[in-house]
Image 1 (spheres, rainbow, N blue to C red):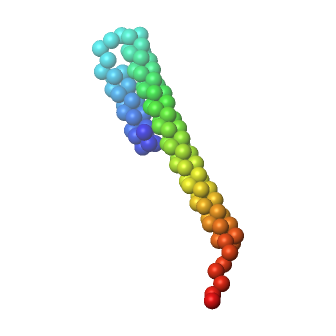
Image 2 (image 1 turned 180 degrees about the horizontal axis):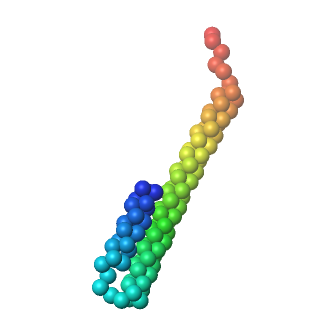
Image 3 (image 1 turned 120 degrees about the horizontal axis):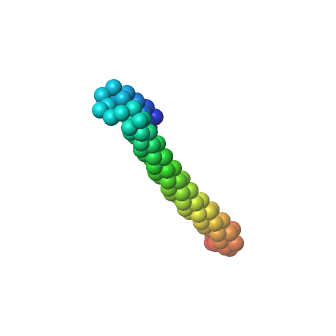
Length: 98
């Protein structure tokens, strides 16, 4: 959830609570309990979404790290192959033209 979505959610939550207070058929005590319950639901939702986003970010970081490690291994193999080719070329006796 981006910051715009979070702002919209919080605005909606606030408007909903305000309308609930104005048109509540319950007593004040019941209305306060209802508001507290809804606020707790909103808090739980935000905690859950935050946890999901952290998990998703962690997975992307791990995938990125794996890709970098694969690239480093490929580059190291290519460098070693180049060194080996150079060694073989410089160690081989050159053919003399006749």
